[in-house]
Image (cartoon, rainbow, N blue to C red):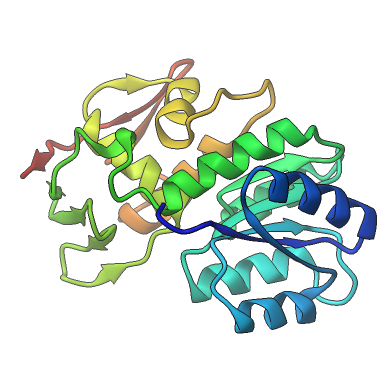
Length: 239
């Protein structure tokens, strides 16, 4: 990234906003804050934002609705903050297109690691993860442009991908016909290790199947290997 990344924190707790803003500013980022959806949209309307750190429990319009709105409008990075017991909301947030999540309370160093990981993926035109991948991958009639991140269906229709979905699909096409564990996929696609109850990969695989498969309940492209993980089965031509 040539410019300083702009991060927007959306949380109704002033103390959290202040602490995170001070910490991330000290790490060299430009940081803005908002306490609800209206405030978030004001900041977004004033200047470009690279990443939104979004609390799910907000007054008025909740974080899930805001995440869905953000993802429908742009490829902006989204990290959702959830309470310890909000597993269902966490999964729904990922299904709506959030790139990552962090349960409260959290350590600032872990938040920084997640911020760096998502920003790398949002701005990854020359990321090391994608270096082995060249311009275009073709499989089962599909075409994935690895530089523009554009996915075209066999019928020539563009299918929009979130940052997380693209990174996971890129990991699959670069490792076709190999059984990949969830930990390995999380490392390839998100550059971090899985926690004991981390369902991020399962959620993203489900989203990809709904976009790629004729019958997501009986997948032919991304198959589950019981007890091991997943395998991307079609031949892939990368050129």
